[in-house]
Amino acid sequence: MKTRIKELRARYDMTQEKLANKVGVRRETIGFLEKGKYNPSLKLAYKVAKTLGTTIDELFIFDESDIE
Image (cartoon, rainbow, N blue to C red; front, side, top):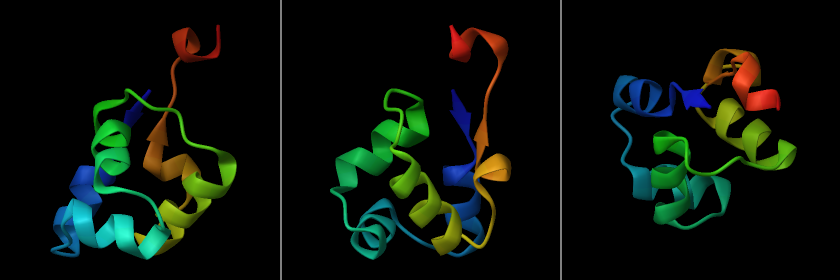
């Protein structure tokens, strides 16, 4: 799964640490999300999207191989 988290964080001049604090996770979790190494819960995906002023659909990019 690919994400636009890093791109949107840059738009708001937000560090991984600051985003992590706003959504209630560790900085490492944000790093794993950005690298596509961690699939978030729906609740976490919603919090990240809301904090970055976007939707889950705009933030996370799925392809068919992600569903299998």
